[in-house]
Length: 488
Picture (cartoon, rainbow, N blue to C red):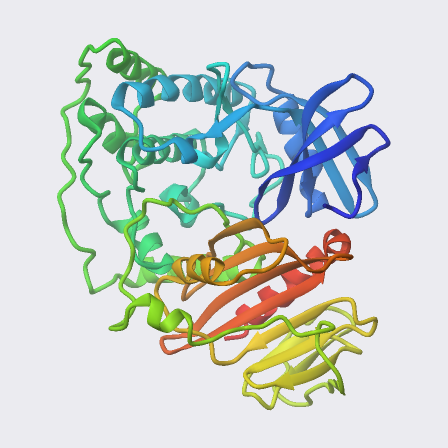
């Protein structure tokens, strides 16, 4: 649980139903009105009001309703309509006409948002909810902007669904939501994302400079999808035209509209233009430093990348990372600050530590260190929080597959998965968050991160606390991981 099971003495948390890098969503019971609701626990309080305000402006059946907002110190919750059903991500791939029907309802919700001056900025299959009553609902306005309010947000969302202008310095408007909408429908009908590549850098490059993969299953939707995915925002069809063409597909008519465009099957050129390389490098660096690495959603149908010459199973078992007893174990030694080559911008009260194992990291002052084999474990003065670095991590182009295999291989007692997904890091990475019971009285909450720092070097990071300490430790954990990742 979150450390509490009742929010504002009214909303009883019943079951964790979703988790992302910035929030967790619970099925809950409203004790006052006796109804089921969804409660979104926000780990970045500054974004709470913006998200609630954006969604509350929209009175539309295709948008999740917001009922209440609670802020208590550093914890915030948004109480929303509970949608009984599944996401488009879980349902895909789907038949052409069904995708067109879903698309019509999502487009209606987007048009309502745009008419109210709200840009969603995170349209993707995970945020399209297919209710059991037949409704299609657009949720998660966590990255939304209202008019010119709020400025840029360092959290970009999933690389599979980010419009090219959001990755560069172009003006971002309604066409960016339409691009993400097109990528969402493409994934829903094709079962893969339009610019899927083996790693994050290659994927961002493809979004900026390569054509989408030619559709194989989209049929009469193909032309519309390719036009929505045009690199030039001015060439994308307007929302009213999109609706007209989707209706034609639903009714089995064939609305040709513009000349149908076939995306050529080409490889990304090996010789990259300096301007695009600078854009990609800047985006990746901003994502790593700004804490946007936690893009948990990943398209499960993306084609796998090659993992060297060895089969994954051979390499996955090579680096076990056992949970240390008592967090870090006995005989801790004091961590002392480095005196040379200290990076700028360390948080107040933090030190820069150069570990004998060959890496450096930022830590709050007063933490201690225990080394055991390939694991170096750091813990806070109270012994309640531990951050472990494994220096012999597997090197793989499939970090998500690594965690999926570890999940199957490890039999943790009382295990519950919270989330698992790719990270927007310069050289790739993935994380795995879960709870488990080392004994009958303790629920341990852990996040593991596989971080590639060079072509032949990776680190495994592990954050360990009790489940009740997790909500108050999220900001510290994220800062440790981000500062470690950005130091290479």
